[in-house]
Length: 530
Image (cartoon, rainbow, N blue to C red):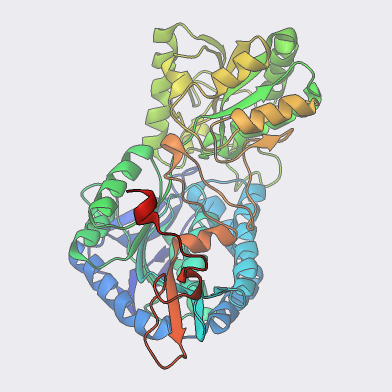
């Protein structure tokens, strides 16, 4: 690693981390501050398939030692990681604001999520339980044990560059696995520093191997294809549904179960009895936190007809007070900053044409914020990066923007009549990640949480947010039913081994030599059945 001076701090020059070696081979890319493109944050190489393969081979070798270390010892490394991350939290926050454009408040939450995850799984090192199972045979004992799956390939997104990787990396290594990790090319500096902090905490070289690069026809594709070479025992991915489906196909033909955390079109329902002040606040945060660049961001605000007009009025007032700008120059006041990259902006910008073509009504928003298209509450120089107006539409089920993930500062208002129509609209798309309902009626809350097709549901809270000890994940187009976080994630990074120990000194055959198979009162069934 080397450092260079840049506009808001040092710029890093980093290489792939494979075992104890830092490798600089590959075409060099740059990551610049998305809020100010004059600020160089990191230079990094692109890994070839040979480098990815080498990383997997190094990980396989490291697995031999790491998997044999007692789980409490592995957990102790994570407790030290929590201490190291806490010490470096301010540094990581500042780097995150520069590298991906998050506000300071959200960046702080991102790093804290990793700290909380490390603390939680440090304790799980002493609770990596199996079970003792009673045998039907005398002089025999049965047991179950969790065993690590081996080398795990990982690809993560850049919108949560520390938190989401921590959900994968921490339980994977706690369970005794080793990793080849390709982070987003939007967050190379953070990924490099995070890996180095694992090593400082005591993780041996080769347990986490870091390779940089892009997705299709680049490092991400090469890493996925290593499943076909038998070099990976597991794959974990956060990203788009389309890519997740392809990874699932490759994993399936190799009889591997991938962890797929994919997109969302998350409904937030406001019923007629809701506390409107609370609902508006939750809907606004669900819509515009991180500039809508969350898989759990609200996609549709489904509002009951009797309160629709009042909710719309209040929500538009709140939206029009949203502060947007360069987070590094406005550390306390902003709601959101720039688009993470040009690709996400282009996809977001397309939805204006979708809405117009489908007949949706634009209530607020004018596309990209620029000096020639200035948002009144913008803070900073809009032409230095890529920023979007907070955008609100009136839309209906069946419209493209109602059904597809947009991944930007856009929300749809959808008018419905009653809870039946609200639940129907909430399920009228192909995703199933997060959801929320605002109501004070317990029966309506019960109906919503039992009838919504989503992996996560909030009652009188937003669609966004996660805690380290609660499972995270979706169904339908949002995932394959696997979960991250909490004790449930251990099922993704271990397999169950059944063990029986024989003390009788002879062969005993279950279901055949078991005492209960002896007939107590014989019946001549051959005579009865003729």
